Amino acid sequence: MGGLAEETVGRDWRPMTQTMSPLQWVIAGLFMPLSMGLIAWRLFALVDWLPILRIPMIVLMAILLLLTIQVTYNQIHIQIKRADTATQTLRAASQGQIELVGTARPIDGPLFSPMYGVSCVSYRSFIGFRPANPAPDGEPISCSDSHWPAAVLLTDGRHDMFMPFSDVGRSSMEVTLQQADAPLEWLRADLRERLAGNDWTVTLREEHVIPSDKPLKVNAVLRTLTSRDSYLETRARHLDLPPPQPGDLETDEIEQAWRAHCNRREEAAGTGEAVPVDALLPLSTFKGLPYACVVDADWGQTTRQLAFNAAAGAASVYLLARLLDFTGPWAVLF
Image (tube, one colour):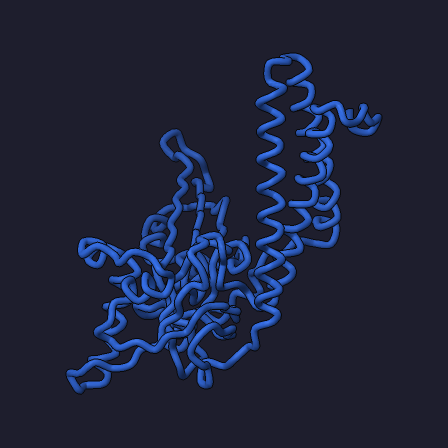
C-alpha cells in the first residue's frame, strides 16, 4: 500500500470521484418524465389490446399511486424532523433523539478498498483485464468483491459511538471511483499476483466506496449502555418489540459486532469490569428509514427522489384516469 502513513489513512478518494456533468443532469431530467410517459403509453396499449387486463391494471395503478404518495410523505416528514432536530457534537451529545455529524470508521480496524487503496468502511469493486497480445488461451478475466459491515463506529476522532450500518440510503453515502491510468501497484496484493508475469490490459476498474473521512449526518437515539448489555435486547425494548431469542443473540451479525466492540473496550480499560459504551438506536421500526446519510446530500438526495416520485405519480394518475374514462386521450401521451 505504500508507506506507513499511507497504510494508516489510505489514498485520497476525491481526485478519483466520478461525478455527473451538468449536461448529464439535464439529460437525466428530460429522460425521466419521457420514460415514465412511454411506460404508461405501452401499458395503456396493452390494456387496449387485451381488455381483460383493465381491472387488474386499474388496481395496480391505484396501489402504485398510493405507495408513491406514502413514500413521498415519509421522505418529506423525515427531512422536516431532521430540520427540527438540533445537530450536536459527539462529545456533548445528550441522551435521546439527536442529530450528529461525524465520520464512520470500521469497527474491526482499518479497511482499504482493493482497487484504489482508499480508507473506507464499505466497498463494491469491479475489475476486468485481458491479455495485451491476445492468444488462443488468453481469455479476458473479470472479478468483483464487496464488503458491507453489520455495524461501524461513528466518530469525531476522539469519541466513538456504536452504530448498526443499514444499506438503506447507500446511494447517498457511496462515491464512485474511476481512474483509468491508476498504477497497478495500487491494486490489492492478490490482484497484483494474478497480473504478475503477464502483459495485461485493464479494461474495467471501478469501485463504489463509503470513505472513512466523508462526513455523515446521523439521526438516531443515543443510549449509553454498559459493555455487558445486549444491543439487540436494548433495541427491542426501545422499539417495543418482542425480546430476541437466545439463538438470535448468538448468530446476529450486529450483536456479534457489538460484543466484539465491548470486549475491546473492556480490554482497553484493563479493569475487568463493565465499562460505559455509547450506542445509537434507530428512530423507528420502519426499515426504509436511512438514519445515516452524507451531510452534503441531505436535501439533494431527497430532491432527486421526489423528482422521480413526481414523474412516476404523474404518469400513474393520467394512466389511471384514462383507464377509468375520466379523461380522453392527450395528443402528447395517448
